[in-house]
Length: 295
Ligand SMILES: [Fe+2]
Ligand SMILES: [Fe+2]
Image 1 (cartoon, helix red, strand yellow):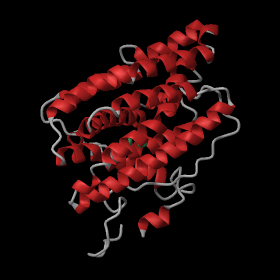
Image 2: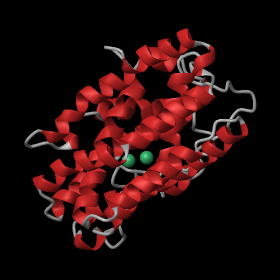
Image 3: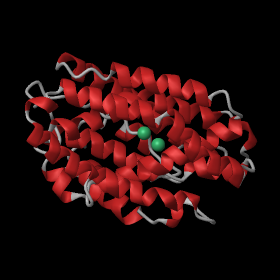
């Protein structure tokens, strides 16, 4: 990484948050259900996540951008730029993925519409409260990302091409996991809004996510093979289920002294960075702005 000249503005990449433009090639011959060895219940929840990411990430970006002028620390300013760049690219690639899903009969439209409605309700609250909601949801995505990158059983049962996109997204979620929270602290965000954020997110977003998941699972053939559907439910919501393990870590957010960086994921990030974008990495060839980010 090149050291910036004193007069040059620090970029997101120079602050450790590079918005990587990756040209994903979605395979023509991919299974309709791409996770948990083709399980409809498990694949559907990730299709729902993909549906809610574009509007959700726009909300995250806007809630942080509003406070940009109040940040004078050049390092944090650069981290904010990196955060905005990464989230914008995630939204764009998930929109492409959702179009690809639609061609295969997986309609993420209802989940997108429901989350847009939920976000409009959150927009009625103060900018500070909206930013607090973003810190809560960023905590959730960081937990999801870490599990996504470390659960070998889950990874081995995913379609390999699909895995690359989700791993790229997960890596960048970890790279920028503290940014919204750092901005929240900088602008004097308090515990009251932070604690209320969980309730607001649960009331407005959760029902739509659950409804979309059930709807998509049913359309994906869940009832044609109830045993398989049950296998997916256990894999997600059983005692050692994927979502259960995410939910178990959510309460860290309510603890006194919570800060996303307290849970150190830098070694994991370095390993995944190398695996995806290092010399000979899985996405090295598809990484379009590699040289621009290094400049
Ligand atoms: Fe993201
Ligand atoms: Fe994020």
